[in-house]
Image 1 (spheres, rainbow, N blue to C red):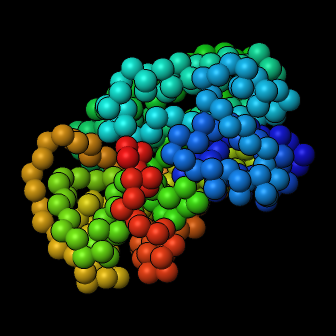
Image 2: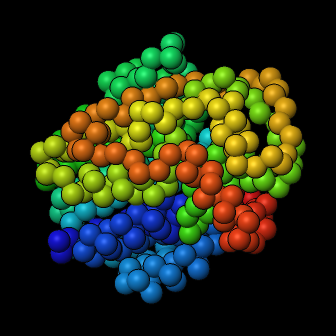
Image 3: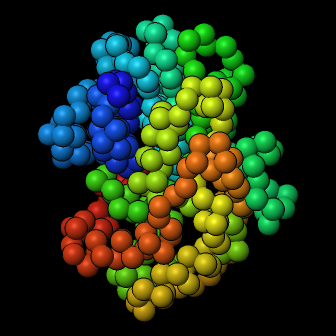
Length: 325
């Protein structure tokens, strides 16, 4: 295709696999990443594949300009990701997730970038009045965390504004899981699978709450699908990114893991700090863009257990596998 795409956060959990997708599509790929979690090995691997890696913070104006100049599209993944990491330092997360995103958008507009894909989250739906009815992109946003509030704010600015030649698209990702070069074990499916495989005691709260899930490779494929689509189909649009059949309760996840390992002990406890409860419809991305996920949660559980059995991660309890070490 000859397009040049800049991926902010391209050495991250979703980013590295997205870069593979974009390379396979014939695009030139650049990455802007501060390597916050020490993923120099991921960056080096991307460079070996032909990706141009800019090792810098996306808040650095000069680094942004160098990385973005001449790009046809920007995929903005870089962020302080997740509720706990944002709650730990609200000022920093606001600086990165709001100020950083605004700066990326302003630069993209100024430098003549044609498309922007903004990574958002299904956490924007928060606590639904009736979580048994899958919510669509037009449904009420009810964020219950700082992270989701920040994503909603940027989304609203992108979808409500006129950015001239820059055409934004927002992707609300389901909760991500699965094996990736920058592995994370602080995500529900990955964490539960690791703990039970390792014969640990697992405490589960909110086991009846619904949440949608998407494999990390499928998250990357969703971004590529947007970039492959005709501009008029995606400009100014928001899409939930996942599959309608992949909404699970935590109780369901535990049962799926138990089918693949009989290790570990599960106890269910009552805690009120995470009231998110939402079931999501992914019919729009399928109908408009023909996007369907290739992986399911049971597939991902099997893949993680295989990786653990093979010693792929070294010590899977190492702090580097979490966004808060």
